[in-house]
Amino acid sequence: MDYSTLFFQLFITGIFLSSLYILMTFGLTLIFGVMEIVNFAHGSFAILGGYACLMIVMKLGFDPFLALIPVTMLMVIVGFITFELFTRFTFDVGDAHVVHYYALLLIISNILALTFGLDYRFIQSPHGYEQIHLGTFKYPLIKIFVTLLSLAIVVGVSLFLRHSMMGKKIRAVSQSKESAEILGIDSLAVRRITWVIGIASAGLMGALVGLVNPFSPYAGTTYLITAFTVAILGGMGSMFGTLIAGFIVGMTESVFSIILPSQITQVVAFIIIIVVLIVRPEGLFSRG
Amino acid sequence: MLEVKSLAAGYGHLQVIYEVSFNLSKGEVVALLGGNGAGKTTTIRSIIGVLHPWNGEVLFSGQPIHHLKTSAIVSLGLSYVPEGKSIFPKMTVLENLELGVNSPEAKTLKSKTLKEVLNLFPRLSEGNKQKQLAGTLSGGEQRMLVIARGLMARPRLLLLDEPSLGLAPKLVRDLFATIGKIHQQGMSIFLVEQNVHLALELASRGYVLEHGHIVLAGKGKELIEMEHIKQAYLGM
Image (tube, rainbow over all chains, first blue to last red; front, side):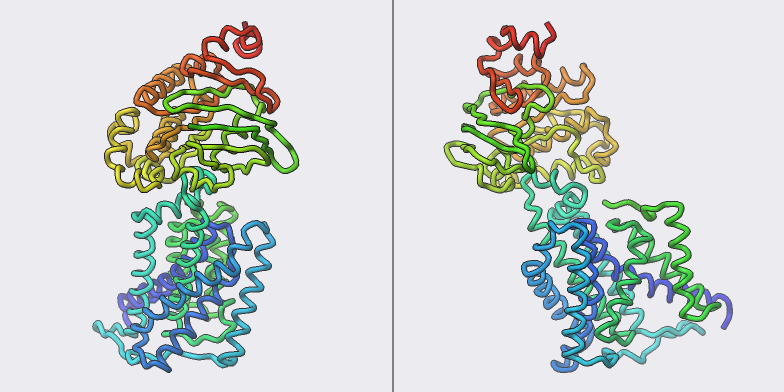
């Protein structure tokens, strides 16, 4: 493999990892920015989305990419139900909410384990073995699809936050809940929508990752660690910070994957985080 | 239009206002005066529903509103302009103004209201200012933006909390001239203010709050001549 092909391979892999990491963190940081909730159950909602996609593909015979539509609808419903039955009761408990959300992580993971067993599962796609060829460069087509879809979801939600009136209200509540409320903005409704967007994006991410990597009921913790890594590096609650940090972590892992074993590449990302946090304890960007 | 009856409110176990009663008629400017810690902001926050009153009643156009959420109170036609710079600093001037539009009527008339509001505060439409982040405006401009945002709701009653706070004397005079213009256009205004002289020049009536109790009430010109007001608030 010549250097230009190697460079291109690393770049495309970096973009693939970055897009997943950004999507993985997007909902987590949105929920933290608006609701000041550290959602430890975020990864388990992603796994739930993965299993939902698997069942829709296996039982109903959907194409995996088409299955993302019912997965989104299902995760929106899950978002509304969990908000009404759980989330809204955790607003006034202060830092103790972390324990509540850790408990939610365990509840969802254990229900999934009881339902589907502990084996790793994989969402089979008819496009799973297809590759694109550009000269000597080869890359799995499914990873290109997953990258494009992840980025499309992130861009779509970002445009919604930037330009829609509800998006502006979400940003306003994230900057000052009281200032928003005195204008007549219903902060509970805003937080409900924020939670639903966060949960739906987690579920979609889980389904997309399930197309390229196997998953099990307890794999949510791995997703969560990656999401926290990106969120802390970018600055908890900062959407722009998430984009930049996801790109940094994804590219770093890709570049170092050629010289280091895969178990070590994540350590490099942590070293970068430690250095950044020494210089900027609040992360690369502040909330807003 | 606004009737406050025997209002009591506070924070935690600390009662701040006691048996506060006053009223405001349509088209009137009424001032609530008092020093730091007298309970002025507590009173205004209890009216708009940010604080839940412990006791008493607040009626707006005859309808009890003291049990309603802030969003419901705002939709009835009250708009609260808080003290300080309660802008959204990382959003543009235009986005800040748009966030004031929440009632169905305000949504229908958004473009017309925006034009009217920018006529009142031309500094907010100079050059590219509407696209500027609100946090980069000067202190005076941020105060103007908060009042302008309050007007975007097309309220029937404007509750202004210490608009002069922290501003240079020249800016305060300009701001009060603009508040005067807003009143001349027919707006009812409830003004909470420490600057007694300016407030009573604008208000037809005033109430004086001390240690959470209304201790004086009267027409603006009568109040300004009272010995207690002269000594306690005007340094005469």
